[in-house]
Length: 277
Image (cartoon, rainbow, N blue to C red; front, top):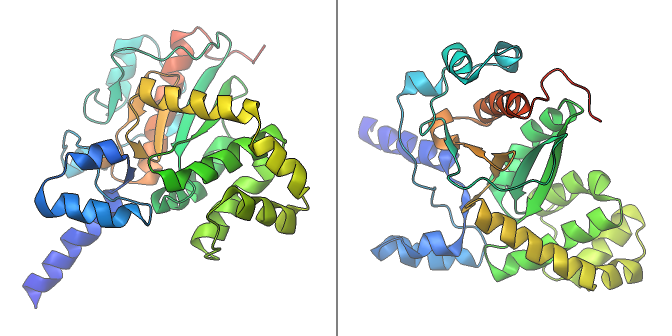
């Protein structure tokens, strides 16, 4: 009985650390893992985590709150003030992505509406987003790991272009994961936006199928590839730094590490303590 309970705890902990992942990453799985990945693709979530350097439980539990990094000096001083280690708690991209923003630090949130881990992340991400400094921007990037993800990404870009994304974003997660709405096509989603928010269905569909949205879809894929995002949810701070959820151990710890990386990025741009221009 004790042995069975131990196995249950191991499985539960692995599920907590999993993320929705790209088909490319799951192709690397061997034997039964690859077969399981194919079966889950229809869901369309594949729960295999991005390999990451392990760290001790004491390191994972030691993430510092934002207040401890608000007045850091140079890079070495910051490293002494916080228990975050590059290559363990976060990675630095070898080729940073150019955000095109000199007066802002950009936080990219890569997500998929059908990803249950992204849905579970939202109750933490939403309040964190609201308290970001004025000179920090959040850019949501819907990814398409599987063909079934495509209409959901298109729906987000359409809602954003129509100026309703902030109002509809959480509701879409809720519709999929709590209300179990059977939406599969962009037409299904257009109907949902109409029924839930009074959005003109014809306007939504014409926007969703426009050249502008096609360009947004292509741009999102370029960003995903450039920042080497292979699982969701993933945060990338200013096109450079990626917190490691597996090492950090919880959604809250990921966002605390992100606070540190935001402050670091503000200092690197000479924006710390400055209001947005």
